[in-house]
Picture: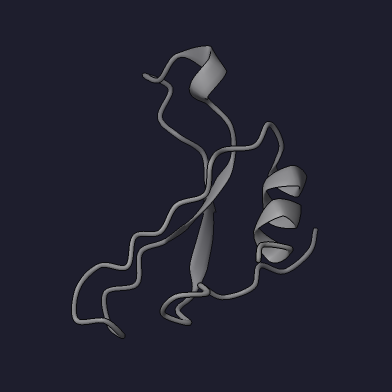
Length: 65
């Protein structure tokens, strides 16, 4: 699996996460989230729209504009 690029806004580390099971099936998937609370003095909290697989989420995140 490819390594995730850092957050494009704050430069902080990001995590690959899966939404809670309480969401409708069509909303579940894998996404990348920045929860950096250091660089900006608050929470960056940028989130990617979920993808069906981990690999697809990583690929989409790493090739963002």
